[in-house]
Image (tube, rainbow, N blue to C red; front, side):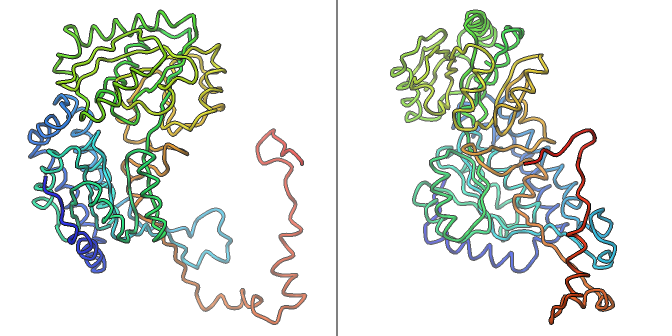
Length: 486
């Protein structure tokens, strides 16, 4: 990886703005070609990409392909096919709420590119979190600056070489480097910023964006909880929760952060977690080729410190290999107020806390920041509805973990502290476009709208304003349901 010279960053911004001004990126054929070039880049260099991510994260190739590369290859191709539909002008002349006299006014909505945009990607899922925003920006018809994380330097260095070979250099530029480089990038005026990462950095980005009133998409994280219904199959729940926890060694925003269980189920749940862990890693996770390592010593020390500070009881795991930066999948039973409940662990620690019942679990979740995802293991449909009603989260997933990332028809994103905006396919496209509305009012309607002109008279009011004041307001908007009166 080569750091981008600071003096070049304003030039990159100016160049991208100049390219956008030519409107070349508005052309659908150009967008489709660039999107297919992304798919070719991934397909033709898949081994180099997997090797680079392994060098950075120690991430098994299977996980790279399953959770990152194949998803982005698929979504680039789908976006190329679907972008004409997404970008199509929407004619509203037949909208049911349009008054008859306005039907000849040609009301239309055109999804329009916002301009020169910035995508800032993190280190934990370097491929999906850099390419997904790139796909959306290109599909939208924007020019793009992609700021890659310096933490995954091997991957960043590879993309620094590949993107100029495959994509239009006038429209897509890469910036590499650390704090000085991203600070300089944020000094520039962008038409949208798409950031994935943590809340601390998000606040810095939001402050910089506010200077230019730049809109944002913030894909953040937080403490994503798991609720275990005592009636659910503990063996299946444990297996699926642990699988979600070990993905990327817990270094992912949708990782199950803590689990809420009733005292009667704690022992069975933990016993089945141990059983699942042994089946995943028969020779132990610390020596397994199927287990990712912690990204660097800074994060290793942070996670190690959490295990040293907790007042909870370690029920599983806890072992570590500092040389290899590996920490076993670890389960800790804690009481309210423990350090492990303060912030997202972002590592292979699953915190357990006992609650009296399912309603208490909902109350605990609602008393804290809204999570990116809430996982509920239950076959009880009433409990599913209760949790849906009593809590808030970006995603609500029943009876598994992590699989929302694989369902491309679902919008993905947070709420409150876990971020705002939605992504995946058309939703990512929508991040980088705005709805430009248009009308074409014909001259011949003048006889129908002339009363809008001064001087205003009683007749003007009677014709233009009075009719709605005398409309009969219905008692009910839903069959069988009355509108409550104040």
